Image (tube, rainbow, N blue to C red; front, side):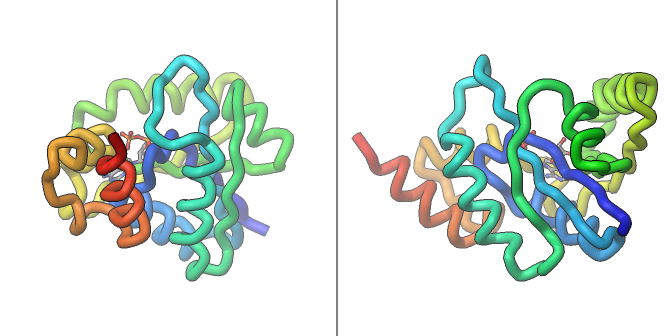
Length: 159
Ligand code: ADP
């Protein structure tokens, strides 16, 4: 069984994330989307909410499961016998940091990182940008799954 993990914050999941997860699901038998529990980073959605959104929008792929992790990603990979991390590369600005992480993860535990180039439609897209645009009433309906758009609209309307 060929397994891979797509890690991230997913606060919330965007069409950029989903594009990478869908393409990974066609290459691997089983893909785990792993939500990083980061207590220092302030987030819009709780980990449970992010996982619930991810579970619904990835259900159609059939071989994608959603989980959360804290601590080192390579420890999660070892515990779950996952040899490959799949990441999306948006721009050259992502590369520097991703290269360091990939080399560290390989050095620590022999876990490989596979980079997929982003779909050009989503190369500028990040969760933080989506939140910022939505916060000021901008239209993000073409950037996130419909379910997330509905949720964001409702959340931003809260006093
Ligand atoms: P962000 O807040 O920047 O969206 P995440 O930590 O949620 O970051 O993203 C997790 C991973 O998903 C990133 O490391 C990257 O590999 C991938 N990713 C995020 N946005 C995109 C995108 N627009 N296109 C391709 N890959 C993406």
